[in-house]
Image 1 (cartoon, rainbow, N blue to C red):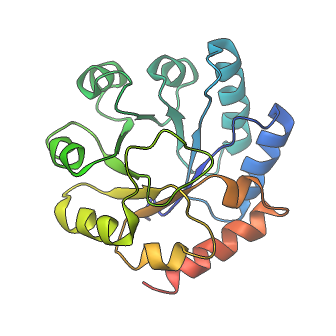
Image 2: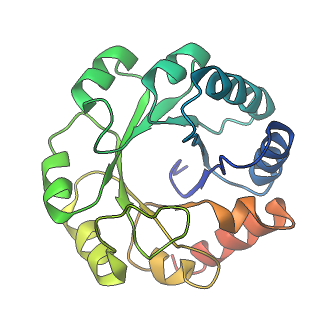
Length: 207
């Protein structure tokens, strides 16, 4: 199974009950990975939310990834961490996490993509494919042509993120990218289970 295929990134504006409900429903719909993203800086709250989500995910076999914070991932024994370019250096994160945890890194330019090929990471998040309201500080928008080029260049698995939804997910999947990361297309859906099922079906229809 490809763990990166349908990669759900949580909405940090949802309260804990809503967050857990959405994660549970998304897993029922077939998401293959869940990343908890918290941008408010309260580490205690982050750990509390991560523990609650991990409990909801127990027994599903779906990896739980923590965004940015190696300390939170270690505290809750998550499956791994996803880092941005301004977070802890990858080498330090790998040393702290050990070799068995998943480690991802966002790349926002061709230069970062090339440099990341020699880093001790398991996968790369190509950001942002399209403009998106959930991420406003992007360096560039790769677009489909840029993503296609990244797929052809990278020796590491790639996950596309940014502005992807049911209307463009098939075009993204056609590039041969290993996975697609989504936030609002699942978290804001009236039925996250159905939304996840439909997104997966669209992706698989082009493979």
